[in-house]
Image (cartoon, rainbow, N blue to C red):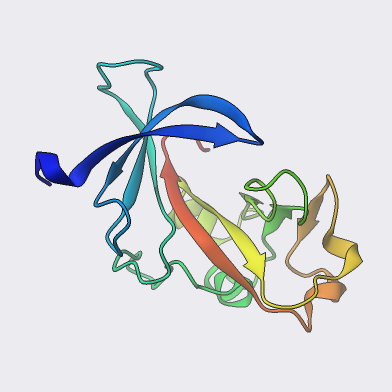
Length: 156
């Protein structure tokens, strides 16, 4: 990676400082965010990694990448619906994948997660502090895409 391509950054969720992350190749298409188990330096144990750039070269062997649609993800899950948190709450946690409901992806990629965003007006039936599924009738006319993909070691 090279020292020049490593940046220490603060992590804020809902306006509150959560700790530090390390960015590799910050502000490029190759950017990767590393999350650490340790709360302070020296950081030794990676808890997970995340990519968010739509131009990112990173993807899973089955094609999942930033920009993959919810519909495509459901198909890769064996046509089994995906559970996610409601939209328009607690950004960046809104539209967050909760589970694959014992579908193919739960077995193939047990550490995979991510967040969705939508391209048009989101139906009220998927807004709020609840868990929803990708087979929600209100989503038939809406395109939702992954805006982040992550791999976390503590996901089961």
